[in-house]
Amino acid sequence: MASPEGLSVVIDLEVPHMDRTEIERFYGDLLFALGEHAQKGGTAVGAAAVAKRVARGYGLASVDRLPLPRLTRAERDELTDRTYRG
Image 1 (cartoon, one colour):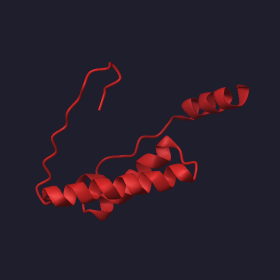
Image 2: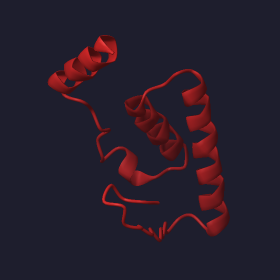
Image 3: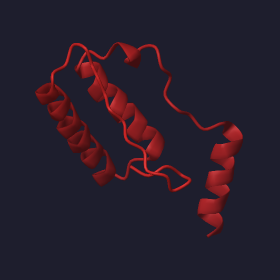
């Protein structure tokens, strides 16, 4: 995965209660759920909610501790203005 600066980032996940097979299954389920979300015209913020739902299904503790990313009202208004201005 590339970072915004174009640097390569490698993440080595260790999830104590999940073995490699479960992590692979989680990733597959996540991609499937994100694909369904995209087919419905979902947003990036909505994709974060999808990821949280899938992670909750796997019992990841951080799901309830970490908030979803949200746009501020000003960011939403700016995005709306750019979308409709063309």
